Length: 179
Image (cartoon, rainbow, N blue to C red):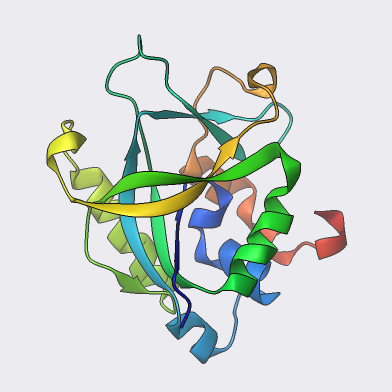
């Protein structure tokens, strides 16, 4: 089992997309799924934005003038060195992998149950109160922070539900040469 822990806040919150990136297909072998654990989490002090002309978001640190900023996402543990290498290649030079502290908002769910994970994430994120600083255990992780210029970010926040409804099927079934 791998010992890397990463926080995902965009397309990689979808287990099918994550598995496609690290295992080459949206539905990997059961033993590959069993290696990963997913937990809903929140990253304080960052803002998530849509990237202009793209299906994916970027996060940037919030300015000190901005209060109560946070990004909800998924904490994934059990990632191997090879998984992280493939994720680094996937993210490219638009992002850097940076250390962060996230707050875990719920119990972990094995990576093999897509419907249970999605229901669990929705329930936990919907029930999380407005004062996220008071909730959850802090965990050290890494995440991909946008470094390709804030001018490429839209003011609007990226929405996971819209991505799942409108774009995820293409991302899961697309030919990897198109990424």
